[in-house]
Structure formats: structure tokens, C-alpha cells
Length: 332
Image (cartoon, rainbow, N blue to C red):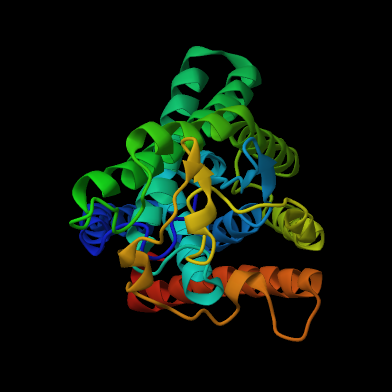
């Protein structure tokens, strides 16, 4: 679901970045005002969790791949605005350091996966939780919220892909950016997510939610020492098993490189050309492209990339937390 560089026009990227900017401002204000400052580092754990879940690629119908995000899970545990910040940071690290998702399209990816996904998922979760008594309501809400949230994000991404050939084409009628119209992009994105990726998102979310509830009953903030040890252990286990994400063969839909998109078969035939906007568009060289490290086996590079991403996520929010405390010592 990570939209790569040059699949969306610069104008589309700009519009989505501007659209998501107010959400960022509100999220920062609400989280710093409402979340206890000593709990702000929890957002780093949320970002680390999202970062790792997005590395676990699974095969999808049609020969493509997909992954969970964990946005609804984080929204349930910390609130939707906190989830927005956590997932946004994970997406920024992936784009800037690992080339997973474009830099110009970062605003679009944040809009889809950090805004649409957790807010839609949290709304469903809260509605079911408020209308179904007992813990059963929370688990049903977490499952359905996660499932609907990721599919809502997939639908929005499909629309963003599908409007490109309608808005941006050359004199010969060839698309300049994403070449697949809505009648192709929507089923191609949505069907695999409805059948597989949404189920994976729901399973991950319910399992981790159940685990957190057991180590921290009643509140995510209760039993800090026990909870922290268990959560860090969970992150370590995810890091160990993250190479399983390499087993899924194929490229995620809408993430083909310029060397392969011309031969991709969609809508009954191969595209047959490379959109000019992709050939001449913005290019960014990530430090560790595709979670790889030169000279190391693929699995080792994947694990080290996971460690690096998790460490940066946690350190970043700890640093932010310390800076806020220094500025507002009377409110600590």
C-alpha cells in the first residue's frame, strides 16, 4: 500500500500533503495536551510496532503482496491522534531510510495509512465496544475495526491511483503517472485486501491487543515495568521473525519499478510503455533500499533494518518527550 515515487503527480502529492497537515497540527496539540508526558515514549513503541508489521509481507491473490499496518491497534491502545503520529513517523522512516514509499508521496501515504486507517478503524471499534457489553465487544470491535480500517485505506489509495490517467496524460493518450484507471485500480487493490490483507490486519491486531491486555489489565498505562518488559519482548520476537516477510514472492500492486511496469498484465493485456512521469520524475536514493545492506545476506539485512527502524522510532519519541518536559517543567 506504500505508494512509490512518481505514481502520483506532484500536484496530487501536494494536495494530499496539504490535506493532512492540519491533522498533524491537531494531533501534536491533542497528544501533548492529553497524554501524560511520561507516556509520550509509548508512541515510539507504537511506531516501532507499525514499522515491523509493515515488514511482514504476505502473498495476495493475483500474485502480489501486502502487509498489515497496525494503525487501528495503536488507536485502540493510545487514541487515534497518537496512532496518527506513530504511523506517520514509521512511514517517514521507511521512505527516507529504506525507500519503502516515495518521498514526494509521503503525504499521500500518511493520509491513507496514518489518517484514514486508524480513524476509520477506531470509529468502528468504539461503536461496537459501546453497543456490545463485556470484553467480547472490545475484541469484536478490534477485529472489525482493523479489517475495515485497512480496507478503507486501500480504497482511498486505489482512487488516488485511478484518477491519475484521467487527469494527467500526454497527447497520445498515455498516462504520465499511474496508468491504471479506477475500474482497474479499485478491484486490484480492494479484492486482495478484502480477502487476505484485512484478515491478516485483524489477526495481528486482536492477538497483540489480547497480549497487551494480559500484561497490562485495565489500562495500557498500568503496571509500567511489567508492561514495558513484555512489550519490548514482543518487539524483539517480531524482529527475529521479520525475515518471514521475505518469503512472499511478487511485488505489491502499484509498486512496480520502471524496469517492470511495461510488462505488467492488468485489464487483459500488458501496459506496453513506461509512463513519462515515472521516467523523468523525482528520484531519491535511500540509505538502505528495500531493507537491504550491501554485502550482507538478505535476511541479515532485513533484521538489521528492523532493529534500526525500531531503535529510531523509540529514540525519536523519547527525545521529543524529554524536550517537552524541559519546556514545560511546571506541567510535568
